[in-house]
Length: 280
Image (cartoon, rainbow, N blue to C red; front, side, top):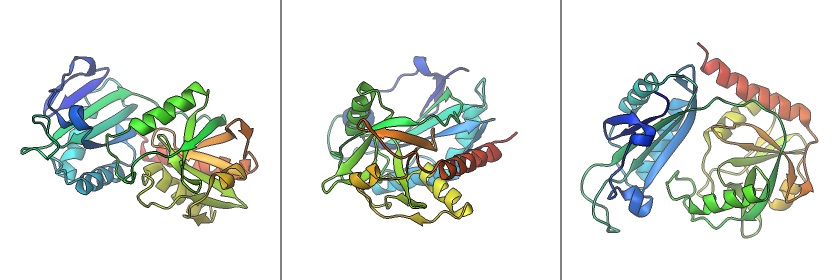
């Protein structure tokens, strides 16, 4: 199968699958999701992603219609229906289905899964970023389906010919990007925003911190500002599909690119971990 879709037990080619209009995703974006890369039919960091899905669902009082082990078994079964083992594995749980009403409906949640071919890209080419005020709500630690502010920020970056949009709150505190976490290196220290309610606790972020500790690079989980970003020795973005990306410009201004040794060491470490964990 080239692209697979799953919905509450139904399986088919992704472009042939349909979803009822009264799914809460249609009315309110009422659900949570996860996505990660698979190589050689092995999903990288599956336990961490599934744990985060259940945490996000719990914070929204959504009951996932499967146990963690049942969900992992389902994902593994679906993966082995594909023509390739190099995939983007996406799954989401919505609150359920019912007539449009803000109050929660009775009945079970809905489980969606999509699988599409995708290989990890270890390219080290630097990228450009832009900044924008973070207008999202105050539950960014929950990986919800409500992504309109992120969609608009990423489109703004795309139109500027940039890779990502770095978001900041009043006081110019940097939170994260439209679909990535963002970190800086300054004076040999790896700085990353704390995992409060203003950022998603990224899986790739956690693996970068793990790599820092392995490489004996000091880590500081403290807030930093746009001004700190612009003065950083290196700027790094991370996501499950692009775990270590280096930035060379922000808002058209040259930035970073001063600690290639540390960037290369981190890049090599996180990609080697991925290759080791997904080896044949």
